[in-house]
Image (tube, rainbow, N blue to C red; front, side, top):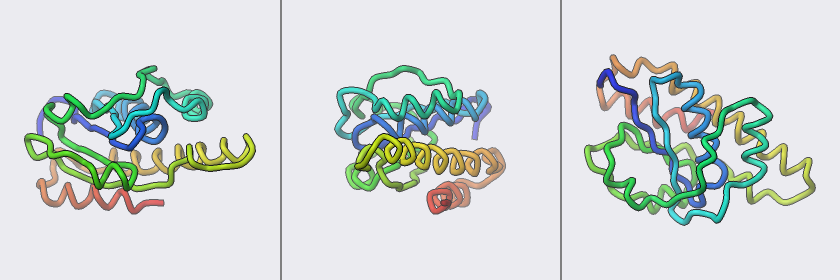
Length: 161
């Protein structure tokens, strides 16, 4: 690949929970090797308060960016486009430059019903799953792998639990 940071776009429907947490995690854990952003196919009005609280509980810096749509981002050059929900995977646009596509499907913690303890646990579980998957991504020898092998391995990260 190149000497510049790898550009990663995380997509979900609302860009209010999973993709926001993934963006923050990769930017923090990637230590300059990655530049992550996130967007949604139908962005919510605001980032879910439980997502923000979870990031803060783990001391992960959050950009404070409001949910945003894909408009304009589909024309930018990306190295990786990773969907984190099935609906975003189904409506994922075509991106220029043939970025590597992967689907890291997972349950939406924002859809979990119950008391506050149950909701916080759902966000913690989603955060920890994303953190494990990002650790696996960071462990890949990205600069050395051929494109096809790299894409297959990035997709396989989505199977990690």
